[in-house]
Length: 487
Ligand SMILES: NC(=O)C1=CN([C@@H]2O[C@H](COP(=O)(O)OP(=O)(O)OC[C@H]3O[C@@H](n4cnc5c(N)ncnc54)[C@H](OP(=O)(O)O)[C@@H]3O)[C@@H](O)[C@H]2O)C=CC1
Ligand SMILES: O=C(O)[C@H](O)CS(=O)(=O)O
Image (cartoon, rainbow, N blue to C red; front, side, top):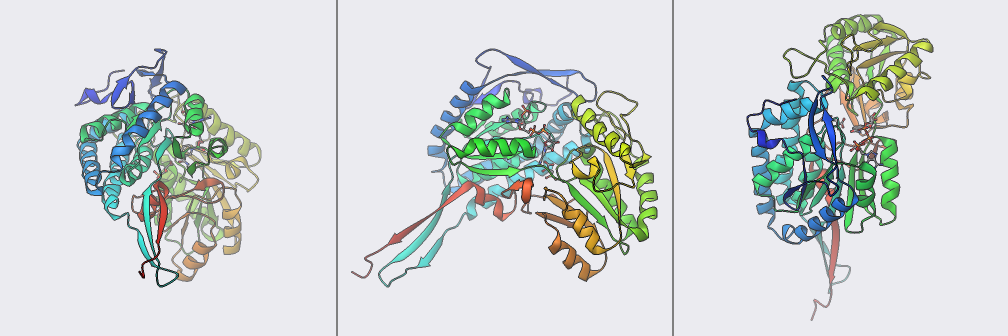
């Protein structure tokens, strides 16, 4: 499959190590395919532990000079990277839609979203301040400084192949760290294109390294190599737990952005049309393949029927197809396994009594397409309630009281995003404070931006990405106590 890029040199297929584009030691490659058509886009270097070890060594060498750069110098390079990403927005979006499947408008949006983290942390680089603390005695003073944590390893998912890299690389570089990145096997091309633009922006050789291939071999080197001082991961909770355990032997700092099971609560007093609009935006973004998608729609009895009627109508209007084509709202799922997983959850729930109000099966287009689906009469024991669906399926659950809604919303091991719609100010505070989540959307279905501290609690992970808090995961605090100052 040939991509229509204005700058074809952005389509890289080798590993980027120490400022060089290199093949795998073995010469092996793996295919990257377009989930909308099944066509092969490229063969990509399939690297492993040896290449990863070299990338980590290069990052270690490069960091010595990078962390000595004045913050303003790092900020200027990050700003240049932002400018180049935005100038290449259309090419980066085409590459992303081709390898991941999301519709082009969403890919454009993700490129801007990812670039916004580069812009934000370029600015934050100049604000990594310390403290002067009064000494415990008259002759002593304490000074706190923040220093880069060290070489960072990042493992990122296929669902946001640009933004999840930017959300990690930008604060790492801003803090003075260097980084080795392993993108998902489904979507390495976006990562390589970002590395090429970083190179053009003046990021020194070795400061950013990107390699794809055997996830267990690459991850094994990343998590065991003592040079790596921090692992940052976005992906499934089971893999996150495994990586966390692998990092324990060398006590690496970790950040984990894991799975979700977002409740979307609609109270009787909600603005119904706004709630339906928010539900559609939150549910069907990226064909439902985001960790903050509404996963359980909890609707109060008084407006349940009206909400379901409006939701079915809005969902039925969503066009399904190849995201590179105009007028498409929902693209394919990332691969055939994802289709089988989603359909498995739907059929298991229907078998347990859920009713199909719309869709409920793979799309007639075949391949990786799934019908936007609304299930009603869902209960808390059903598979779609208990599991992160990661597909265009909206389970609707009834509730009677505010207490019922909070109890059902919190009835999960996950705690990433949550949403609710009400116009009662007292309820806003009661419910927002009672929800066990890192993120609460109130009368809003799209909550992600670079200025907010994105992250979850419970088994949705640890750490925060974005906002003024996002730099904290990439620095270590050191204090110096000076004595003898009275003579
Ligand atoms: N919280 C979030 O933001 C996200 C959550 N998810 C969750 O993950 C599920 C599946 O998505 P998926 O992308 O397959 O998530 P995975 O957790 O399977 O993969 C995420 C990343 O981890 C890598 N990986 C997988 N196994 C290992 C390992 N043993 N050692 C090192 N790296 C590894 C993958 O590489 P490779 O591609 O080579 O397998 C990929 O780069 C979704 O259903 C959802 O629950 C997914 C994406 C984002
Ligand atoms: O991995 C994801 O699903 C993203 O973190 C969601 S968002 O930040 O793009 O909303």
